[in-house]
Length: 120
Image 1: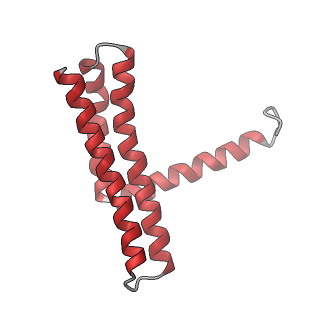
Image 2 (image 1 turned 90 degrees about the horizontal axis):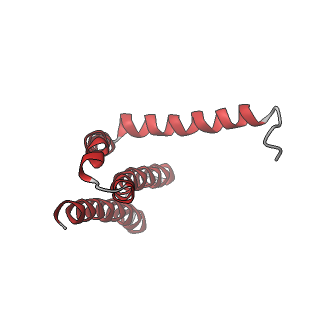
Image 3 (image 1 turned 90 degrees about the vertical axis):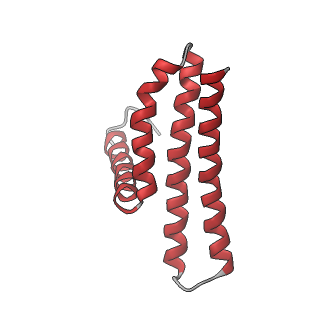
């Protein structure tokens, strides 16, 4: 792919608009995502106060963004499973539970990192 091709910008714009639509869908449909965005709005600027070095600030930011990424992936898996069928299925339940566990692990990671930076 030629970076300077005339087709590059429209394709890039289309990909960006799909991503933004996905974020909008998650915002409208998922209360946990809205709460995690609020967490990002609070902790993002706080990372510049809490972090002493650029590395600490970057690690604090990464811990927040990691939660958002895992929540988006969790939502995507839930949508895909629900698309397959709404009837109860143990494998579908397990897949959703595993994705939910990933979000929990990312939240534990966030708390751990912030505690380490704040208290050590």
